[in-house]
Length: 191
Figure 1 (tube, rainbow, N blue to C red):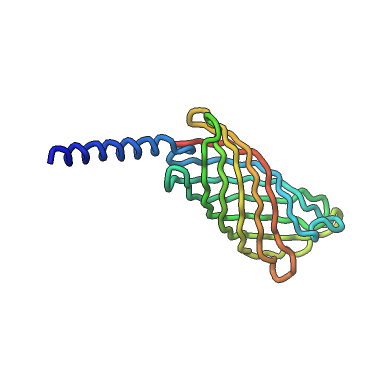
Figure 2: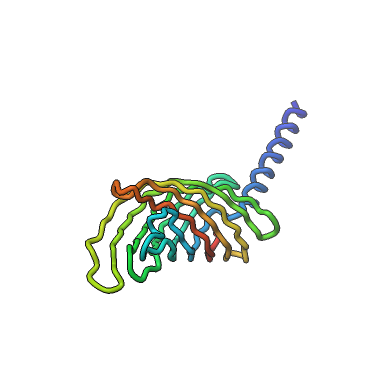
């Protein structure tokens, strides 16, 4: 009987220390958020024809909460526009739900990668360099994305680089898709 109690006590200590150790090793804390500033490029050839521009800037805000020590659930919302001086101007606002896996690659350096679903508001308007802008067309499009980040933690603050590829359905049955890739930097906090 004493051996059984001793064995249970040692087992409880091992399990407790393992759980505490796992909790301490969550690479991006219990949660994190960041502001992103990215370069965005739309991949559809439609946006590189004529006066159109397929590149622009993206500003986003993301937040994640820990599910397990290395898995996080969260989302991102942002706004993008192409840099255009005549042609079709794109206003793109993606809402994303993502899951990511994070692993500490070296002390204070965290690599994460993930995937998710998106629902994006899109507005396209032809704005010639000279003349009157045409009526805008808008739609909501479904999509999905894959991404990877490299983050450097400085106590509660973090800075990093990120890359994402997002694929979307066609816009307004016009055989134009808003699939894009983004590359940029992020600044945030880990808590």
